[in-house]
Amino acid sequence: MADRIGTTTPGATIAIVSGETPILTKGYGTANTDVDAPVRANETVFRVGSVGKLVTYTAVMQGVEQGVLDLDTDVNSYLGDSTVSVPETDDDPVTLRHLGTHTAGFESLLDPDIVADPAAVDSLESVLVDQQPERIRPPGELVGYSNYGAGLAGHIVARAHDTTFEDYVQSEIFEPLEMTHSTFAQPVPSDQPGTLAAPHIRDGESFLPADDVYINMRAAGSLSATATDMAAFMQAHLSDGAFGDGQILDAETVDTMHSRHHVRHPAVTNWRYGFHEYGDSNANLVGHSGATVNFTSYLLLAPDHDIGIFVAYNSKPSELRGHEEKAPTFRAGMNPTTPTQSTVRLLGWIFHAPIHTLK
Picture 1 (cartoon, rainbow, N blue to C red):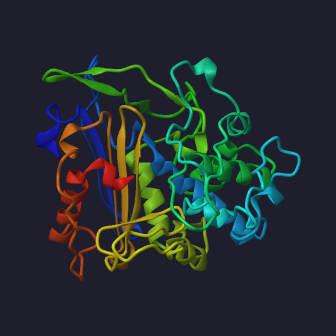
Picture 2: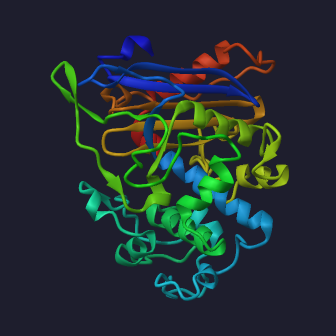
């Protein structure tokens, strides 16, 4: 990683966990080239984009566990007097299971309503009304990646608990996991702990800070977090929902979330709940990637080996494009406190995987 700083990206942050134990959290390079501020894993906040969908769908599964949500119920039953509703264009309704597997049948619109002016940030409910895509196929048939679906899932979580999406994840996920530097709020509040890394664009052989952008469909991609915070999130998912003395999900719920919910052709990777499969279908590697114009991030779990890896860049590293996909290899018997050769190979796969394969 260190030899890529300044050539591939100005800054990066990484977390590796083994079960409930962090084995590496580290920052590399600079958070902002204008002021030469170093990246610190526990202080520098990165925009992690669609990696935040894993938080959103964890919140959905909390509602399922509590009995206030059900994966196979028509989502319109949760919308009530909301101005948002899903048109009944097919015999089968859209459900939360469809939203978490991107099989609702919505037209794939990849823009989560990104705006350059913070004054243009609107409520999630308004955005879901204004940006609603067409339903172009029956639910459950095919995968069509949907930021809208994740936004709708976040809105349903908020309505089920009579609060805002941002407040819900703050109290029910971030606080129990001690993710003190994390927020979905747009813009990031001025009193938020930590320092927000600047986005960067390449300028010849160097990098220049770029203007920040804001994501209106917040539950789909506005999460800002440190590597240390994301380590806590991975620890919970690798420890049957437990973190310290707390529990954000029961073990059975975690297993449900990590199980396959939509199976496609054997040559194509499948969807768990919120998580996407990577590599060989038998490797049981699940995760998500993220990108917000000039930030890039990846989170990958290997539940069979109790390993989790998160990495984020404050740029779009060109070196990540054009490489052949490499399936990671694992060995059993990993040391819980020292990165093994298996982990190193997995890291190499993440650092070199082409962005389009990780969406």
